[in-house]
Amino acid sequence: MKDDILTYINNTFTYELQEDIKRAITLFDLFEIEEYQDDLSNLLMAAGDVEPAQIQDSFLGIIRRTSDFILIDHTLALTECPLSMSNEVLSSLYILQDLFDYSEVKKYLEIDENVLTRISKILALYCSLSYADIMYIVKDYDSSLLDRIKELADINDNKIYNQDEILKIGTIFNLEKKLGTYTNVETLALRFMKKGFKANYDLKHYLPFIGDEVLATDSDNIDRGIDMLSSMVYNIISIAIFSSDGYDVFMLGSNEFLKFINEYLDLMVPNVTENLKNKLANSVSGFYEYLETTKEKPDGQI
Image (cartoon, rainbow, N blue to C red; front, side, top):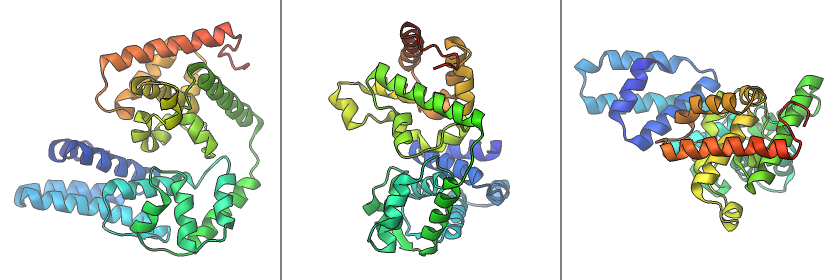
C-alpha cells in the first residue's frame, strides 16, 4: 500500500473502517488488481481543491467499485452492504481458488438445493458470515460460479504435489495437532485444516483471513475454561506455524520463532499490549518444552 494512501486512511476514518479498508486493499492485491492505487493517489493529489467530505466519499467509492469489479468477475453482485461483509465474500472467493482439500465444498456442490443456496453455503465455509447472511446480500449471481468451483475441485483432485511439499505440509499438520493437544484448544489453524485450507503459504497470505478470528474463542474452548488472551495467543502461534516462512523459522528454535511472530503482531492483532507479548513469549517457550519432553523435537523429524 502506498504511503499517501495509508496516511490518509489512518488520519481520516474511524478505527473500524480503517481496518475494513486496509483488509479490502490487501484482498485487491491478492487478486492482483492494481488500477485502484493510481485512482486513490490521483484523488488525494487533488484533495486541496475539493471538500474533505467529498474526498472521503470518492475514496470509499473507489474501494467499493474495485470490490464490485472482483465480485462481478466471479458472477456475483451484492447489495449496498457494509464493506466488512463484502470483504468476507471476497476472502472466501480467494480461498476457494486453492484449497488443499475440496471435500467439504463438494458436499454443497452436490446437494439438492437451488443455485443461490449452494453458492451461499460454499462461501460461508470460508468466512465469518452465515449462509443466510450471504443469501440476503447477494442481489445477482450466475450458476457458472458453481461450475468454476467444481472445475477447481477437479483440478485439485488430479494435482500432483512434490514429495518435499507433501512432507512439509504433513509435518505442519502434525505440529498443529500437537499444539492442540498441548493447549487443549481448537486453534484457528486447526479450524482452517478442517475446512481444507492449504498450509505452506507465506504468512502474509493468511493475514486477510485472520483478523477477527485471532480474537475469537470458540464455544468448545469456552467450555474448557480457556480465557480470551490464551485463545488469542494460541491462534497466533498456530497460524505462524501454518505458514511456510513461519514453519521454517519454527525449526530454528524458540527465540527466532518468537522474533518472527513479533514482526507480524501489529498486523495480526490491534492494540498489542505488553501482557499479550509476555503471554506469547511464555506460550512459545512452553510449547517448545512440551515438544522436548514428549520427544517431539521441532527438528523436522516429528
